[in-house]
Image 1 (cartoon, chains in turn green, orange):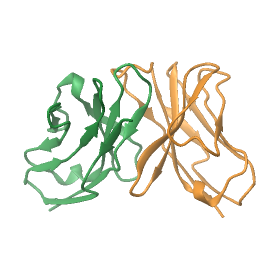
Image 2: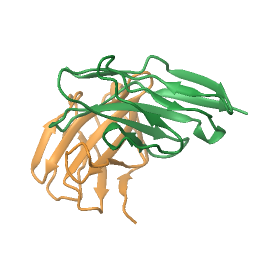
Image 3: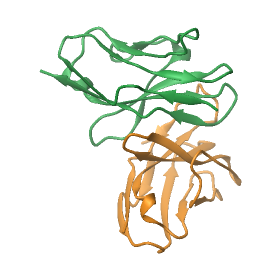
Length: 109
Length: 114
């Protein structure tokens, strides 16, 4: 069964510091991976997906099939990045989206 | 404005009293789903629907029912709510089930079952 693990429930960094939110997955096929973000009192929204190989709000994530990881990175964190981040996996041809437990990121001034 | 709406946003009820949480989208999306969000467990899919009259179980379907009579609506039904169903519920929709389609989430419904 597919599974997504985010080992850090809480992550705190200072403004301007690099940040990395870890995500590991287990899935035997070809997964599609996503990062979702939930700002305080707002709905969940898509941040980025591996298939697009894009950078959104300075965040990037690279799919590492060898390590089965999809870590989210930003070189210089900003206070407005404080939010709950969820990593999610979708089967290549399936419909289910499996989320990790989430990581609460706090960027301190 | 393209959006997913849920009602009610907050609900406190008692064990056994049937309730329905509505979800509606105005984007003509085929795919809709329900999740519950619990601390330390993240989001878990309850049910999903790939189109009208096509629904299937997600990871945690026990105690829930859904229906998809119209494309825009996907209500979540709790026939006999129990305290372990106290949670934050999110409805989501996307154009199809393809991974390239963005899922749009509703604002959430916070349910408390006493």
